[in-house]
Image (cartoon, rainbow, N blue to C red):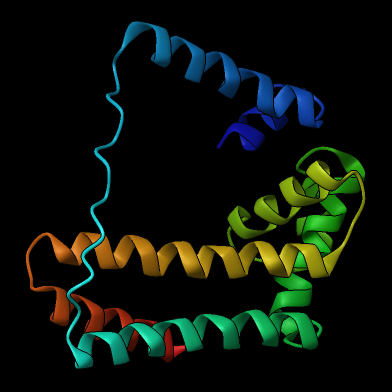
Length: 170
């Protein structure tokens, strides 16, 4: 949303113009005390054999995804055209270029392309492999958020089971 707003206001994208407003925002939040620090997460060592097996299964799926993203380059057509090619075009122009969308006959929303563009801006160059790692870390964050969210209303065994199912879908 910030990158789209900058495009409409003709503000060129670079790492400092994208990060500095967020730094100011978090400093303001920190000093006004609007957000409290999260409570520490208690780790319990009394896992049953089934819970330990599910946890190992989740870790194996994470390792598998990390290895697959390291070994294989991006091969899907929609990934190349919809995410990375448009991300490169936005990175090169430092703006949302409507002509690229019109001439590429691409009707998908620009969210993932802007995410790839932000990765490229952070690196200072284009690198598909690093952007793929970024998506891998989204996968890991999804599993973590899913586990702790489901843990609020179900047992640890069930939360681990459904987290394993979600992780093994990909």
